[in-house]
Image 1 (cartoon, one colour):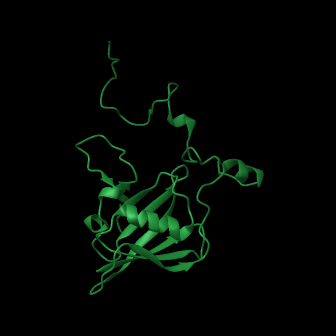
Image 2: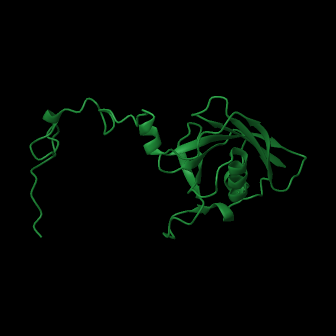
Image 3: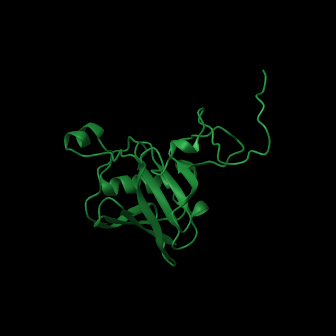
Length: 184
């Protein structure tokens, strides 16, 4: 069996990569094949996220061990075969390649090819230029770019100071009784 993944970017319209990979290969093999196909250096923190049909993140597969809580499920690329978390056609994944700005590739398992075998992974389709691996904030500012830090950056543009009392607490709803300060 062979998995064929299609990779796209929301930054570059004509960017497409197709990767064929052995389902028993690890996410690390997949990660390295993606990096090679787009010409990125292997010097950044990256993660895969298994997503639902609406691209909502569900499970994270990290490059390095990030969580030391034994009660939390954690997956590490070098230890996790792809078919442990990806089994169905049309399964969606995100590949975060720039953690500072949460830039990512959108990945879909476009086909499960049965009756064929392969070892490792290879890029079988390459179209368009990949977006830059990281964003240089100084370079962006010099070019006149904007980080879009407008009045909505910190939240809702409909924020009204009158919705809060002098100490910043919401006074709009009934709290169900009086508030008594805890004494320590």
